[in-house]
Length: 392
Length: 217
Image (cartoon, rainbow over all chains, first blue to last red; front, side, top):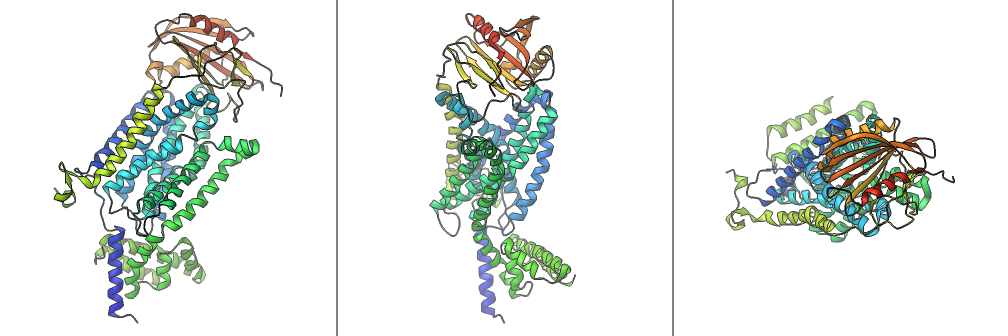
C-alpha cells in the first residue's frame, strides 16, 4: 500500500528527472542572438554550396551513379533511422535537434570540411613520407583526426544551441550517431560517384553496385558508430552527465573511436601485414564485430542515467496502477530486461501482449516527459492505451 | 521576440548570447584549422621526391613506364617500392601516377578497358569535358590524331590540345596485362606555362617506355 508521502516523493523524483533530462524542452534552432547558430548555418550552407558545385559538372558522366547512390543510401538511412529511434527510447531527443545534427554531418562535415582537409593532409603525407607510404597509411592517419573533428564540431555547436536538451552521455551517444549517420550517407554517395569513374567511366552500373554493396556492409560499424563514441566521450570529458566528469573514460572513448576508424581505413594494409591476404580480406567482418561489441558495451553504460530518468518518470504510474513493477522494469530497462519480461508471459498471445505493453509503456514515458509532468490529453491517451492492451 | 530568444541581460555581450560564445569560438578555431591552416601548410610544403635514374613506375600486373629523371613523383608506386597492397589496374579505381616538373605536369591512368585506343581517347575527352576540375574541363583539341608506337612495340594514339596552362598532349594505349586482361592506359601531359619546352622530349621518352613486362610469377 502506498502512502501520500510515497506518492509525493515519487512525484518529486519524476519532476526532477524531467527537469534534469530536458525531455520536456523544445528545440529552437533560430536563436538569432546565439553565435553558435551562425557558425552552424555557415558550415551547413557552405557545405551545401560545395556539394552542389562538386557534383554539378559530373552529372553528365556520372549522373546515373549519383542517382543510384543517392536513392540506395536514402533507403539505407531509413533503416538506420528506425534503429536509432528504437535506441533512443528512454528520454527521446527532439527530432529537430537530431535532424540538424544529421544535416551538419552530411553537408558541413563531408564536402566543406573533410574533403578539403583530407586532400591537403593526404598530399602532405605524400610530400613528407613518399607516395608508397602514403598509399598504405595516409588514409588511416588522416580520417580519424580530420573527420572525427569535422563531425564533433557540429556536436559542439549543438551543445551551444541546446544545452538543456543534451544532458547525458547517452544523449551524446545518440546525437553523435545522427551526425555520423549524415556524414556516412554523404560519404557513401561520394564513394559511389567517384567509384563510377573506374574503368574510365564505362562500367558504371557494375562499379556502382560493387561500391554500394561494399559501403553498405562497412557502414554497419562506421561513422555513426565512431561519432557515437566520440560525442559520448565528449560528454564525459565535459562532465555533462549527472554522474559527473570522467575525463579518462571520455578520452578512452574518443581514442577508441579513432583507432577503430584508423583500422577501417587501413584494414587491408593492417590485415595483410599481420596475416597476409587472407587476414587482409577478413578484416572487414572482424572490424564490424569488434565495432558492434564496443558500441554495445559503451551504449549500455551511457544509458544508465537515462534508464534512471525513465524509471523516475514512470514511477508515479506504478503508484497509480497504470503499470506494475515488472512492466516498469521492462520499459525503463535494457533490451535484456524487455526480453525477460516478454519471455515470462504465457503463450504466444501473452508474449505478443507483453511486447505491446512495453511499447505502450514507452509511449507513456515519452508523453509524460514531453508534457513536463502535466496532465495532458496525450498522457491520458497513453494511459488508456496501456489499459486497453491489457484487455486484448 | 519569443521567450526563448530573450537573452538575460547579464548574459549578453554586444547584444549576443554569450553562453553560446565558447562553443562558437571552439568550433571556429577547429574549422579554421581544418579548412585553412592544414591546406596552407600543404601549399607551403614543396614536393621533394625527385625521380632518380633507374626508377620505373609500376602500373600493376606487369605494366610499367619510365618517368623522366628529376621530375617530382606526386602520386604513384615505383617498381622498387614494396607497397603492402599491390598495384592493380583492374581494381575499381584503377591505377594512377602523377609527375610534375617546372614547366609540365604529367598523369598516367590505367584501368580495365575493352575497346580500342581510339575509343579510349574519345572516352577520356568525354570525361574531361564534364570534369569537376576547371583545369581539366577547359581544353581544345588541336590537329588530328596520329599513331604512336612505344619502344616495346605497343601502338597507340596521340592527340594534342591546348588547356588553361598552355600546350597539352594525350596518349591512349590498350595492352594486355600479365593475365591477358586488356588495360587502357592514358598518358596526359599539360604545360604549366604556355609551352612544354625541354619537357616535350621527356614526354616522348615516357610514352616510348610504356611496356608490358612478363612477371616471374
